[in-house]
Image (tube, rainbow over all chains, first blue to last red; front, side, top):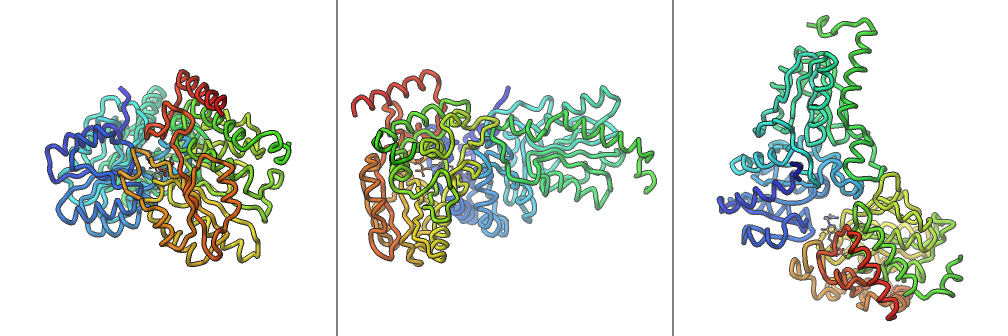
Length: 322
Length: 280
Ligand SMILES: Cc1ncc(C[n+]2csc(CCOP(=O)(O)OP(=O)(O)O)c2C)c(N)n1
Protein backbone atom coordinates (compact mmCIF):
# COMPACT_ATOMS: atom_id res chain seq x y z
CA UNK A 1 0.00 0.00 0.00
CA UNK A 2 1.24 3.47 -0.84
CA UNK A 3 2.22 5.49 2.18
CA UNK A 4 4.10 8.72 2.76
CA UNK A 5 7.58 8.22 4.23
CA UNK A 6 7.16 11.36 6.33
CA UNK A 7 4.08 9.90 7.96
CA UNK A 8 5.87 6.62 8.58
CA UNK A 9 8.60 8.61 10.34
CA UNK A 10 6.07 10.51 12.44
CA UNK A 11 4.20 7.42 13.53
CA UNK A 12 7.33 5.48 14.41
CA UNK A 13 9.02 8.30 16.29
CA UNK A 14 5.90 8.74 18.40
CA UNK A 15 6.26 5.14 19.56
CA UNK A 16 9.99 5.57 20.21
CA UNK A 17 9.51 8.75 22.25
CA UNK A 18 7.44 6.73 24.69
CA UNK A 19 10.20 4.16 25.06
CA UNK A 20 13.22 6.46 25.22
CA UNK A 21 12.91 9.46 27.53
CA UNK A 22 16.10 11.02 26.13
CA UNK A 23 14.52 11.46 22.70
CA UNK A 24 12.96 14.80 21.70
CA UNK A 25 10.97 15.91 18.73
CA UNK A 26 11.61 19.54 17.75
CA UNK A 27 9.32 21.01 15.11
CA UNK A 28 9.33 24.18 13.04
CA UNK A 29 5.62 24.68 12.31
CA UNK A 30 5.66 22.04 9.61
CA UNK A 31 2.22 20.62 10.29
CA UNK A 32 3.48 17.04 10.16
CA UNK A 33 2.43 16.61 13.78
CA UNK A 34 -1.23 17.45 14.44
CA UNK A 35 -2.37 18.71 17.84
CA UNK A 36 -3.20 15.09 18.72
CA UNK A 37 0.24 13.85 17.72
CA UNK A 38 1.84 16.63 19.73
CA UNK A 39 -0.30 15.76 22.73
CA UNK A 40 0.68 12.10 22.41
CA UNK A 41 4.35 13.09 22.57
CA UNK A 42 3.77 15.18 25.70
CA UNK A 43 6.70 17.35 26.75
CA UNK A 44 9.04 15.47 24.41
CA UNK A 45 7.56 17.54 21.55
CA UNK A 46 8.13 21.27 20.98
CA UNK A 47 7.08 23.52 18.11
CA UNK A 48 9.83 26.14 18.05
CA UNK A 49 8.21 28.21 15.30
CA UNK A 50 9.29 29.11 11.78
CA UNK A 51 13.03 29.49 12.41
CA UNK A 52 15.13 26.70 10.95
CA UNK A 53 18.58 27.96 11.85
CA UNK A 54 17.47 28.39 15.42
CA UNK A 55 15.93 24.91 15.29
CA UNK A 56 19.28 23.34 14.43
CA UNK A 57 21.11 25.38 17.05
CA UNK A 58 18.63 24.46 19.78
CA UNK A 59 18.82 20.80 18.75
CA UNK A 60 22.61 20.91 18.94
CA UNK A 61 22.49 22.49 22.38
CA UNK A 62 20.09 19.86 23.68
CA UNK A 63 22.13 17.07 22.10
CA UNK A 64 25.26 18.40 23.78
CA UNK A 65 23.39 17.95 27.06
CA UNK A 66 22.50 14.31 26.46
CA UNK A 67 19.18 14.52 24.61
CA UNK A 68 18.63 12.97 21.17
CA UNK A 69 16.52 15.42 19.14
CA UNK A 70 14.60 14.54 15.98
CA UNK A 71 14.09 17.82 14.15
CA UNK A 72 11.41 18.37 11.54
CA UNK A 73 11.72 20.69 8.58
CA UNK A 74 11.66 20.52 4.80
CA UNK A 75 14.78 19.27 3.04
CA UNK A 76 15.22 22.62 1.31
CA UNK A 77 15.21 24.53 4.58
CA UNK A 78 17.52 22.05 6.29
CA UNK A 79 20.12 21.68 3.57
CA UNK A 80 20.30 25.29 2.49
CA UNK A 81 18.89 27.69 5.00
CA UNK A 82 20.05 26.00 8.18
CA UNK A 83 23.23 24.58 6.69
CA UNK A 84 25.76 26.49 8.74
CA UNK A 85 24.10 25.52 12.01
CA UNK A 86 24.15 21.91 10.80
CA UNK A 87 27.78 22.09 9.75
CA UNK A 88 29.21 23.93 12.76
CA UNK A 89 26.88 23.22 15.64
CA UNK A 90 25.82 19.67 14.79
CA UNK A 91 28.37 17.96 12.51
CA UNK A 92 31.54 19.60 13.87
CA UNK A 93 30.51 18.53 17.37
CA UNK A 94 29.42 15.06 16.18
CA UNK A 95 26.11 15.51 17.98
CA UNK A 96 23.32 12.96 17.63
CA UNK A 97 20.74 15.23 16.01
CA UNK A 98 18.32 13.49 13.62
CA UNK A 99 17.41 15.85 10.80
CA UNK A 100 14.14 14.60 9.37
CA UNK A 101 13.85 16.43 6.07
CA UNK A 102 10.53 16.18 4.25
CA UNK A 103 9.70 17.25 0.68
CA UNK A 104 13.01 15.81 -0.58
CA UNK A 105 13.86 15.83 -4.28
CA UNK A 106 10.90 16.79 -6.43
CA UNK A 107 8.34 15.92 -3.76
CA UNK A 108 7.37 19.57 -3.29
CA UNK A 109 6.16 19.43 -6.90
CA UNK A 110 4.30 22.55 -7.97
CA UNK A 111 5.44 24.42 -4.85
CA UNK A 112 8.49 25.16 -6.96
CA UNK A 113 12.24 25.66 -6.60
CA UNK A 114 11.98 27.41 -3.21
CA UNK A 115 10.59 24.18 -1.79
CA UNK A 116 12.27 21.52 -3.91
CA UNK A 117 15.51 20.03 -2.60
CA UNK A 118 17.77 18.96 -5.44
CA UNK A 119 21.02 19.78 -3.65
CA UNK A 120 20.50 18.28 -0.21
CA UNK A 121 22.27 14.96 -0.75
CA UNK A 122 25.34 16.62 -2.23
CA UNK A 123 25.49 19.14 0.58
CA UNK A 124 24.89 16.70 3.41
CA UNK A 125 27.17 13.93 2.21
CA UNK A 126 30.27 16.12 2.27
CA UNK A 127 29.88 16.94 5.95
CA UNK A 128 32.31 14.84 7.98
CA UNK A 129 30.53 12.43 10.29
CA UNK A 130 27.09 13.00 8.86
CA UNK A 131 25.05 9.87 8.09
CA UNK A 132 22.81 10.45 5.06
CA UNK A 133 19.88 8.15 4.34
CA UNK A 134 17.12 8.15 1.73
CA UNK A 135 14.51 5.53 2.59
CA UNK A 136 12.74 4.21 -0.49
CA UNK A 137 9.41 3.50 1.16
CA UNK A 138 7.46 3.70 4.39
CA UNK A 139 8.62 0.35 5.79
CA UNK A 140 12.24 1.30 5.17
CA UNK A 141 11.64 4.61 6.95
CA UNK A 142 10.41 2.77 10.03
CA UNK A 143 13.53 0.61 10.05
CA UNK A 144 15.81 3.64 9.69
CA UNK A 145 14.08 5.58 12.46
CA UNK A 146 14.34 2.56 14.74
CA UNK A 147 18.08 2.19 14.05
CA UNK A 148 18.67 5.91 14.47
CA UNK A 149 18.02 5.78 18.20
CA UNK A 150 21.43 4.29 18.92
CA UNK A 151 23.34 5.64 15.91
CA UNK A 152 26.36 7.72 16.97
CA UNK A 153 26.66 11.23 15.51
CA UNK A 154 24.33 13.23 13.30
CA UNK A 155 21.86 11.81 10.79
CA UNK A 156 20.10 13.36 7.81
CA UNK A 157 17.05 11.49 6.50
CA UNK A 158 15.45 12.60 3.25
CA UNK A 159 11.69 11.99 3.30
CA UNK A 160 8.89 12.64 0.82
CA UNK A 161 5.56 14.41 0.95
CA UNK A 162 2.75 12.40 -0.61
CA UNK A 163 2.21 8.62 -0.46
CA UNK A 164 4.58 6.59 -2.63
CA UNK A 165 4.36 2.86 -3.48
CA UNK A 166 6.30 0.23 -1.54
CA UNK A 167 9.39 -1.36 -3.09
CA UNK A 168 8.36 -4.95 -3.81
CA UNK A 169 10.12 -7.66 -1.81
CA UNK A 170 12.69 -5.34 -0.22
CA UNK A 171 13.96 -6.44 3.19
CA UNK A 172 14.34 -3.73 5.87
CA UNK A 173 17.44 -1.63 5.11
CA UNK A 174 20.43 -1.51 7.42
CA UNK A 175 22.06 1.95 7.65
CA UNK A 176 25.35 1.91 5.75
CA UNK A 177 24.72 -1.31 3.83
CA UNK A 178 23.52 -1.12 0.22
CA UNK A 179 20.59 -3.35 -0.60
CA UNK A 180 20.97 -5.74 -3.51
CA UNK A 181 17.46 -6.14 -4.93
CA UNK A 182 18.53 -8.22 -7.93
CA UNK A 183 21.74 -9.73 -9.24
CA UNK A 184 22.98 -9.78 -12.82
CA UNK A 185 26.38 -9.52 -14.45
CA UNK A 186 25.91 -7.13 -17.37
CA UNK A 187 25.01 -3.76 -15.87
CA UNK A 188 24.44 -2.23 -12.45
CA UNK A 189 21.46 0.03 -11.77
CA UNK A 190 21.77 2.15 -8.64
CA UNK A 191 18.97 4.25 -7.23
CA UNK A 192 17.94 5.98 -4.03
CA UNK A 193 14.49 7.14 -2.96
CA UNK A 194 11.05 5.85 -3.94
CA UNK A 195 10.65 6.59 -7.66
CA UNK A 196 14.28 5.98 -8.65
CA UNK A 197 14.48 2.59 -6.92
CA UNK A 198 11.16 1.55 -8.45
CA UNK A 199 12.49 2.66 -11.83
CA UNK A 200 15.61 0.49 -11.40
CA UNK A 201 13.57 -2.57 -10.39
CA UNK A 202 11.20 -2.19 -13.35
CA UNK A 203 14.03 -1.46 -15.78
CA UNK A 204 15.94 -4.59 -14.70
CA UNK A 205 12.85 -6.65 -15.49
CA UNK A 206 12.56 -5.19 -18.98
CA UNK A 207 16.30 -5.57 -19.64
CA UNK A 208 16.18 -9.21 -18.54
CA UNK A 209 13.49 -9.85 -21.14
CA UNK A 210 15.93 -8.41 -23.69
CA UNK A 211 18.77 -10.64 -22.48
CA UNK A 212 20.62 -8.04 -20.39
CA UNK A 213 21.13 -9.02 -16.77
CA UNK A 214 21.23 -6.22 -14.23
CA UNK A 215 22.21 -5.94 -10.60
CA UNK A 216 19.91 -3.50 -8.80
CA UNK A 217 21.26 -1.63 -5.79
CA UNK A 218 19.07 0.39 -3.49
CA UNK A 219 21.77 2.77 -2.26
CA UNK A 220 19.67 4.14 0.58
CA UNK A 221 22.71 5.31 2.57
CA UNK A 222 24.90 7.88 0.83
CA UNK A 223 27.19 8.30 3.78
CA UNK A 224 28.86 6.17 5.05
CA UNK A 225 28.96 4.94 1.46
CA UNK A 226 28.94 1.20 0.87
CA UNK A 227 31.65 1.24 -1.81
CA UNK A 228 32.39 -2.44 -1.21
CA UNK A 229 29.01 -3.68 -2.40
CA UNK A 230 29.06 -1.25 -5.33
CA UNK A 231 32.54 -2.23 -6.47
CA UNK A 232 31.78 -5.92 -6.22
CA UNK A 233 28.68 -5.45 -8.34
CA UNK A 234 30.46 -3.22 -10.85
CA UNK A 235 33.51 -5.48 -11.40
CA UNK A 236 31.89 -7.82 -13.92
CA UNK A 237 29.68 -5.15 -15.46
CA UNK A 238 30.33 -2.87 -18.42
CA UNK A 239 28.07 -0.06 -17.27
CA UNK A 240 26.67 1.49 -14.12
CA UNK A 241 23.57 3.68 -14.31
CA UNK A 242 22.56 5.87 -11.38
CA UNK A 243 19.18 7.53 -10.98
CA UNK A 244 18.00 9.99 -8.35
CA UNK A 245 15.68 12.92 -7.68
CA UNK A 246 18.57 15.34 -7.36
CA UNK A 247 20.61 17.59 -9.58
CA UNK A 248 23.03 15.42 -11.52
CA UNK A 249 25.99 16.82 -9.64
CA UNK A 250 27.14 15.67 -6.27
CA UNK A 251 24.39 13.31 -5.16
CA UNK A 252 24.12 9.55 -5.61
CA UNK A 253 25.65 9.69 -9.09
CA UNK A 254 28.54 11.70 -7.74
CA UNK A 255 29.13 9.29 -4.88
CA UNK A 256 29.05 6.28 -7.22
CA UNK A 257 31.40 7.93 -9.72
CA UNK A 258 33.86 8.91 -6.99
CA UNK A 259 33.95 5.41 -5.54
CA UNK A 260 34.33 3.65 -8.88
CA UNK A 261 36.84 6.10 -10.38
CA UNK A 262 39.33 5.34 -7.64
CA UNK A 263 38.78 1.62 -7.14
CA UNK A 264 37.16 0.04 -10.19
CA UNK A 265 36.89 2.39 -13.18
CA UNK A 266 33.64 1.62 -14.93
CA UNK A 267 31.50 3.77 -17.21
CA UNK A 268 28.90 5.59 -15.09
CA UNK A 269 25.80 7.26 -16.52
CA UNK A 270 24.16 9.64 -14.07
CA UNK A 271 20.44 10.23 -14.49
CA UNK A 272 18.96 13.08 -12.48
CA UNK A 273 17.46 16.51 -12.77
CA UNK A 274 19.32 18.64 -15.33
CA UNK A 275 21.61 21.38 -14.11
CA UNK A 276 19.02 24.19 -13.80
CA UNK A 277 16.24 25.35 -11.52
CA UNK A 278 12.95 23.63 -12.22
CA UNK A 279 10.78 25.85 -14.41
CA UNK A 280 8.16 23.26 -15.20
CA UNK A 281 4.98 23.47 -13.12
CA UNK A 282 3.42 20.26 -11.88
CA UNK A 283 3.24 17.71 -9.08
CA UNK A 284 5.95 15.19 -8.24
CA UNK A 285 4.70 12.50 -10.63
CA UNK A 286 4.53 15.04 -13.42
CA UNK A 287 8.04 16.32 -12.75
CA UNK A 288 9.48 12.81 -12.46
CA UNK A 289 7.97 12.05 -15.87
CA UNK A 290 8.99 15.44 -17.27
CA UNK A 291 12.63 14.87 -16.37
CA UNK A 292 12.24 11.28 -17.46
CA UNK A 293 13.44 9.69 -14.24
CA UNK A 294 11.69 6.52 -15.30
CA UNK A 295 12.30 2.84 -15.98
CA UNK A 296 11.98 3.50 -19.72
CA UNK A 297 14.76 6.05 -19.48
CA UNK A 298 17.02 3.63 -17.61
CA UNK A 299 16.37 0.96 -20.25
CA UNK A 300 17.08 3.44 -23.03
CA UNK A 301 20.26 4.62 -21.35
CA UNK A 302 21.52 1.05 -21.00
CA UNK A 303 20.54 0.08 -24.56
CA UNK A 304 22.09 3.17 -26.12
CA UNK A 305 25.32 2.76 -24.19
CA UNK A 306 25.65 -0.96 -24.94
CA UNK A 307 24.67 -0.56 -28.62
CA UNK A 308 27.20 2.25 -29.07
CA UNK A 309 29.93 0.15 -27.50
CA UNK A 310 29.05 -2.77 -29.75
CA UNK A 311 28.88 -0.59 -32.90
CA UNK A 312 32.18 1.12 -32.26
CA UNK A 313 33.75 -2.32 -32.29
CA UNK A 314 35.08 -1.87 -28.80
CA UNK A 315 34.61 -4.84 -26.63
CA UNK A 316 34.51 -4.41 -22.92
CA UNK A 317 37.25 -1.81 -22.53
CA UNK A 318 37.91 -3.06 -19.04
CA UNK A 319 39.34 -6.23 -20.55
CA UNK A 320 42.02 -4.15 -22.20
CA UNK A 321 42.90 -2.44 -19.02
CA UNK A 322 42.81 -5.25 -16.52
CA UNK B 1 -9.53 49.15 -19.64
CA UNK B 2 -7.12 51.51 -17.93
CA UNK B 3 -6.91 51.51 -14.18
CA UNK B 4 -8.57 54.94 -14.09
CA UNK B 5 -11.53 53.66 -16.10
CA UNK B 6 -11.69 50.56 -13.97
CA UNK B 7 -11.80 52.52 -10.74
CA UNK B 8 -14.50 54.82 -12.12
CA UNK B 9 -16.65 51.72 -12.42
CA UNK B 10 -15.54 49.65 -9.42
CA UNK B 11 -14.64 50.38 -5.83
CA UNK B 12 -11.59 48.75 -4.27
CA UNK B 13 -14.01 46.45 -2.47
CA UNK B 14 -15.47 45.33 -5.82
CA UNK B 15 -11.99 44.50 -7.06
CA UNK B 16 -11.11 42.66 -3.85
CA UNK B 17 -14.28 40.59 -4.16
CA UNK B 18 -13.29 39.47 -7.65
CA UNK B 19 -9.78 38.60 -6.45
CA UNK B 20 -11.23 36.55 -3.57
CA UNK B 21 -13.37 34.56 -5.94
CA UNK B 22 -10.38 33.79 -8.19
CA UNK B 23 -8.44 32.67 -5.11
CA UNK B 24 -11.23 30.31 -4.12
CA UNK B 25 -11.40 28.88 -7.64
CA UNK B 26 -7.64 28.31 -7.76
CA UNK B 27 -7.72 26.45 -4.45
CA UNK B 28 -10.32 24.10 -5.92
CA UNK B 29 -7.76 22.90 -8.48
CA UNK B 30 -6.02 19.53 -8.23
CA UNK B 31 -3.12 20.76 -6.08
CA UNK B 32 -5.14 23.13 -3.87
CA UNK B 33 -3.48 26.24 -2.47
CA UNK B 34 -2.67 28.37 0.56
CA UNK B 35 -6.22 29.59 0.88
CA UNK B 36 -6.36 31.14 4.36
CA UNK B 37 -3.26 33.31 4.16
CA UNK B 38 -4.18 34.33 0.62
CA UNK B 39 -7.63 35.55 1.63
CA UNK B 40 -6.23 37.47 4.60
CA UNK B 41 -4.04 39.65 2.38
CA UNK B 42 -6.39 40.28 -0.58
CA UNK B 43 -7.43 43.71 0.70
CA UNK B 44 -3.81 44.75 1.22
CA UNK B 45 -2.90 43.59 -2.30
CA UNK B 46 -5.93 45.35 -3.74
CA UNK B 47 -5.01 48.62 -2.03
CA UNK B 48 -1.43 48.31 -3.28
CA UNK B 49 -2.07 47.33 -6.90
CA UNK B 50 -5.20 49.40 -7.51
CA UNK B 51 -4.30 52.56 -5.64
CA UNK B 52 -0.77 52.82 -4.31
CA UNK B 53 1.81 51.21 -6.58
CA UNK B 54 3.10 53.10 -9.55
CA UNK B 55 3.31 50.21 -12.02
CA UNK B 56 2.52 49.93 -15.71
CA UNK B 57 1.18 46.65 -17.03
CA UNK B 58 2.38 47.60 -20.51
CA UNK B 59 5.86 48.30 -19.23
CA UNK B 60 6.43 46.02 -16.24
CA UNK B 61 10.18 46.69 -16.35
CA UNK B 62 9.90 50.48 -16.09
CA UNK B 63 12.97 51.28 -13.96
CA UNK B 64 11.01 53.98 -12.15
CA UNK B 65 8.23 51.64 -11.05
CA UNK B 66 7.39 50.96 -7.45
CA UNK B 67 8.29 47.45 -6.46
CA UNK B 68 6.37 44.88 -4.49
CA UNK B 69 7.58 41.64 -2.94
CA UNK B 70 5.32 38.97 -1.52
CA UNK B 71 7.66 37.77 1.20
CA UNK B 72 4.94 35.37 2.38
CA UNK B 73 5.23 33.77 -1.04
CA UNK B 74 2.80 30.99 -0.18
CA UNK B 75 -0.02 33.50 -0.78
CA UNK B 76 0.86 33.24 -4.49
CA UNK B 77 -2.75 32.58 -5.46
CA UNK B 78 -3.70 36.03 -4.11
CA UNK B 79 -0.80 37.71 -5.89
CA UNK B 80 -1.53 35.96 -9.20
CA UNK B 81 -5.23 36.85 -8.99
CA UNK B 82 -4.34 40.47 -8.22
CA UNK B 83 -1.82 40.71 -11.06
CA UNK B 84 -4.32 39.19 -13.48
CA UNK B 85 -7.12 41.54 -12.39
CA UNK B 86 -4.70 44.45 -12.71
CA UNK B 87 -3.98 43.40 -16.29
CA UNK B 88 -0.49 41.91 -16.16
CA UNK B 89 -1.79 38.71 -17.79
CA UNK B 90 -5.18 37.30 -18.76
CA UNK B 91 -7.52 36.29 -15.94
CA UNK B 92 -8.22 33.04 -17.83
CA UNK B 93 -4.69 31.93 -17.11
CA UNK B 94 -5.47 31.61 -13.40
CA UNK B 95 -7.32 28.34 -14.06
CA UNK B 96 -3.97 26.71 -14.82
CA UNK B 97 -2.56 27.39 -11.34
CA UNK B 98 -0.22 24.58 -10.24
CA UNK B 99 -1.05 22.47 -13.28
CA UNK B 100 1.33 21.05 -15.83
CA UNK B 101 1.89 23.45 -18.71
CA UNK B 102 1.03 26.56 -16.68
CA UNK B 103 3.58 29.15 -15.61
CA UNK B 104 1.75 29.75 -12.33
CA UNK B 105 4.03 27.90 -9.91
CA UNK B 106 2.82 27.33 -6.35
CA UNK B 107 5.10 30.13 -5.14
CA UNK B 108 5.74 33.31 -7.14
CA UNK B 109 8.21 32.93 -10.02
CA UNK B 110 9.65 35.51 -12.37
CA UNK B 111 8.11 33.83 -15.38
CA UNK B 112 4.84 35.43 -14.26
CA UNK B 113 4.52 39.04 -15.47
CA UNK B 114 4.54 41.46 -12.56
CA UNK B 115 6.48 39.22 -10.18
CA UNK B 116 9.74 40.91 -9.21
CA UNK B 117 11.65 38.03 -7.62
CA UNK B 118 10.73 34.50 -6.54
CA UNK B 119 9.76 34.04 -2.90
CA UNK B 120 8.38 31.16 -0.86
CA UNK B 121 11.10 30.35 1.61
CA UNK B 122 9.98 32.61 4.44
CA UNK B 123 12.17 35.43 5.69
CA UNK B 124 13.79 36.53 2.42
CA UNK B 125 11.57 39.39 1.28
CA UNK B 126 12.58 42.19 3.61
CA UNK B 127 16.30 41.89 2.84
CA UNK B 128 15.53 41.88 -0.89
CA UNK B 129 13.34 44.94 -0.29
CA UNK B 130 16.25 46.68 1.43
CA UNK B 131 18.29 45.95 -1.66
CA UNK B 132 15.64 47.45 -3.95
CA UNK B 133 15.36 50.54 -1.75
CA UNK B 134 19.11 51.02 -1.59
CA UNK B 135 19.53 50.60 -5.35
CA UNK B 136 16.74 53.11 -5.98
CA UNK B 137 18.37 55.58 -3.64
CA UNK B 138 21.73 55.22 -5.40
CA UNK B 139 19.98 55.72 -8.75
CA UNK B 140 18.27 58.83 -7.47
CA UNK B 141 14.82 57.35 -7.99
CA UNK B 142 11.92 58.33 -5.77
CA UNK B 143 10.10 55.03 -6.29
CA UNK B 144 9.05 53.02 -3.27
CA UNK B 145 9.38 49.37 -2.27
CA UNK B 146 6.62 47.45 -0.49
CA UNK B 147 7.09 44.07 1.18
CA UNK B 148 4.25 41.92 2.53
CA UNK B 149 5.17 39.63 5.43
CA UNK B 150 3.24 37.02 7.40
CA UNK B 151 3.09 37.35 11.16
CA UNK B 152 4.38 33.79 11.60
CA UNK B 153 7.13 34.67 9.15
CA UNK B 154 8.40 37.20 11.70
CA UNK B 155 9.82 34.23 13.65
CA UNK B 156 12.56 33.98 11.03
CA UNK B 157 15.61 35.81 12.39
CA UNK B 158 16.48 37.05 8.90
CA UNK B 159 13.44 39.35 9.02
CA UNK B 160 14.96 41.18 11.97
CA UNK B 161 18.40 41.34 10.40
CA UNK B 162 16.74 43.15 7.50
CA UNK B 163 14.74 45.33 9.88
CA UNK B 164 18.01 46.44 11.48
CA UNK B 165 19.62 47.10 8.10
CA UNK B 166 16.63 49.13 6.84
CA UNK B 167 16.64 51.36 9.90
CA UNK B 168 20.44 51.74 9.90
CA UNK B 169 20.39 52.74 6.26
CA UNK B 170 17.43 55.08 6.87
CA UNK B 171 15.44 53.46 4.07
CA UNK B 172 12.32 55.58 4.28
CA UNK B 173 11.18 54.55 0.79
CA UNK B 174 10.78 51.01 2.14
CA UNK B 175 7.37 49.98 3.49
CA UNK B 176 6.62 46.64 5.13
CA UNK B 177 3.13 45.33 5.70
CA UNK B 178 2.55 42.58 8.24
CA UNK B 179 -0.49 40.42 7.55
CA UNK B 180 -1.37 40.07 11.22
CA UNK B 181 -3.94 37.30 10.93
CA UNK B 182 -2.82 35.77 14.23
CA UNK B 183 -2.38 32.29 12.76
CA UNK B 184 0.45 30.39 11.13
CA UNK B 185 0.58 26.87 9.69
CA UNK B 186 -0.24 24.84 12.79
CA UNK B 187 -2.01 27.26 15.13
CA UNK B 188 -2.19 30.69 16.72
CA UNK B 189 1.02 32.65 16.28
CA UNK B 190 0.87 33.95 19.82
CA UNK B 191 0.61 30.42 21.23
CA UNK B 192 3.68 29.26 19.29
CA UNK B 193 5.84 32.36 19.70
CA UNK B 194 4.21 35.44 21.25
CA UNK B 195 4.94 38.54 19.15
CA UNK B 196 3.20 41.19 21.21
CA UNK B 197 3.78 44.01 21.72
CA UNK B 198 4.47 43.79 17.99
CA UNK B 199 4.18 47.50 17.24
CA UNK B 200 6.61 48.22 20.06
CA UNK B 201 9.06 45.67 18.71
CA UNK B 202 9.15 47.36 15.32
CA UNK B 203 9.34 50.81 16.89
CA UNK B 204 12.29 49.74 19.00
CA UNK B 205 14.01 48.60 15.81
CA UNK B 206 13.73 52.14 14.45
CA UNK B 207 10.64 51.82 12.25
CA UNK B 208 7.59 54.08 11.97
CA UNK B 209 4.56 51.93 12.81
CA UNK B 210 0.82 52.07 12.10
CA UNK B 211 -1.68 49.39 13.06
CA UNK B 212 -5.06 49.26 11.26
CA UNK B 213 -7.94 47.12 10.03
CA UNK B 214 -6.42 45.08 7.21
CA UNK B 215 -9.74 44.52 5.49
CA UNK B 216 -10.50 48.14 4.67
CA UNK B 217 -8.79 48.70 1.31
CA UNK B 218 -9.58 52.43 1.16
CA UNK B 219 -8.03 53.03 4.58
CA UNK B 220 -5.04 50.83 3.69
CA UNK B 221 -4.56 52.70 0.45
CA UNK B 222 -4.60 56.09 2.16
CA UNK B 223 -2.09 55.05 4.77
CA UNK B 224 0.26 53.25 2.42
CA UNK B 225 0.13 56.10 -0.03
CA UNK B 226 1.19 58.52 2.68
CA UNK B 227 4.36 56.57 3.57
CA UNK B 228 7.01 57.46 4.66
CA UNK B 229 5.24 58.54 7.80
CA UNK B 230 8.35 59.72 9.58
CA UNK B 231 11.30 61.13 7.65
CA UNK B 232 14.37 58.93 7.64
CA UNK B 233 12.56 55.85 8.94
CA UNK B 234 11.23 52.79 7.14
CA UNK B 235 7.51 52.24 7.67
CA UNK B 236 5.64 49.13 8.77
CA UNK B 237 1.90 48.76 8.62
CA UNK B 238 0.49 46.07 10.87
CA UNK B 239 -2.69 45.01 9.10
CA UNK B 240 -5.12 43.29 11.45
CA UNK B 241 -6.65 40.58 9.32
CA UNK B 242 -8.56 37.33 9.48
CA UNK B 243 -7.06 34.17 8.00
CA UNK B 244 -9.63 32.81 5.54
CA UNK B 245 -11.46 36.17 5.43
CA UNK B 246 -14.76 35.86 3.58
CA UNK B 247 -15.37 32.16 4.20
CA UNK B 248 -17.23 31.68 7.50
CA UNK B 249 -16.57 27.92 7.53
CA UNK B 250 -12.79 28.46 7.43
CA UNK B 251 -12.18 31.98 8.72
CA UNK B 252 -10.02 32.25 11.81
CA UNK B 253 -8.90 28.62 11.64
CA UNK B 254 -5.39 27.32 11.14
CA UNK B 255 -6.90 24.52 9.03
CA UNK B 256 -7.52 27.15 6.32
CA UNK B 257 -3.75 27.32 5.73
CA UNK B 258 -3.49 24.86 2.86
CA UNK B 259 -6.72 23.67 1.34
CA UNK B 260 -7.82 21.70 -1.68
CA UNK B 261 -11.47 22.69 -1.88
CA UNK B 262 -13.72 19.73 -2.68
CA UNK B 263 -16.48 20.44 -5.22
CA UNK B 264 -18.91 20.76 -2.31
CA UNK B 265 -16.74 23.19 -0.34
CA UNK B 266 -15.94 25.09 -3.51
CA UNK B 267 -19.68 25.65 -4.00
CA UNK B 268 -20.03 26.62 -0.35
CA UNK B 269 -17.17 29.08 -0.69
CA UNK B 270 -18.63 30.66 -3.80
CA UNK B 271 -21.97 31.14 -2.14
CA UNK B 272 -20.34 32.52 1.04
CA UNK B 273 -18.51 35.12 -1.03
CA UNK B 274 -21.75 35.94 -2.87
CA UNK B 275 -23.63 36.38 0.43
CA UNK B 276 -20.91 38.68 1.72
CA UNK B 277 -21.23 40.70 -1.48
CA UNK B 278 -24.99 41.11 -1.17
CA UNK B 279 -24.60 42.36 2.41
CA UNK B 280 -22.02 44.95 1.45
C1 LIG C 1 11.75 29.08 5.59
C2 LIG C 1 10.41 28.47 5.57
N1 LIG C 1 10.04 27.65 6.58
C3 LIG C 1 8.84 27.04 6.55
C4 LIG C 1 7.97 27.26 5.52
C5 LIG C 1 6.65 26.50 5.48
N2 LIG C 1 5.52 27.43 5.73
C6 LIG C 1 4.82 27.95 4.70
S1 LIG C 1 3.65 29.02 5.22
C7 LIG C 1 4.03 28.76 6.84
C8 LIG C 1 3.29 29.49 7.90
C9 LIG C 1 3.43 30.97 7.73
O1 LIG C 1 2.70 31.66 8.68
P1 LIG C 1 2.39 33.18 8.44
O2 LIG C 1 3.64 33.90 8.07
O3 LIG C 1 1.65 33.70 9.61
O4 LIG C 1 1.50 33.15 7.12
P2 LIG C 1 -0.11 33.18 7.00
O5 LIG C 1 -0.70 32.69 8.28
O6 LIG C 1 -0.44 34.59 6.76
O7 LIG C 1 -0.41 32.32 5.83
C10 LIG C 1 5.07 27.84 6.95
C11 LIG C 1 5.65 27.38 8.21
C12 LIG C 1 8.39 28.11 4.49
N3 LIG C 1 7.62 28.35 3.42
N4 LIG C 1 9.59 28.71 4.55
